[in-house]
Amino acid sequence: MGARRPRPVVLDAGAFIAFEKNDRRVRTLIELAVAHRGVLLAPAAVIAQVWRDGAKQVRLARLIGSGAVEVVPLTLEEAQGVGAVCGQRAARDIVDASVCLLARREGAVVVTSDPDDLRRIDPEIDVVTC
Image (tube, rainbow, N blue to C red):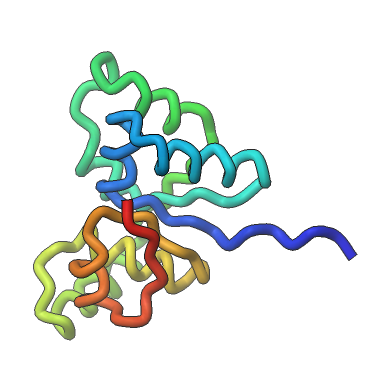
């Protein structure tokens, strides 16, 4: 029996911002996930939320360009699910809703700076605060 793979990790905008600011805790978490062949995921909308200028966001550009993070596109079906969740939870932030739905679908833990915002959308979501 082989070693168990770690749970997938969904990175939200706060995690990417912390990584870009060289936050030691987030950097270590990402490095450990990569070293242990963990799966790092981010909804494409999260990248849109944090991306401004790759020439100035060197750490972020390297992380995204390294292939360590799988950027997950939003299909029509998923977009409808995100909209439905926003309607059910009276949530405005479609990016947060897409993070929650991706985490739920993948059985992932979310690295976030806004655990309360995510828990308003999905009270059962498993988060690590950065």
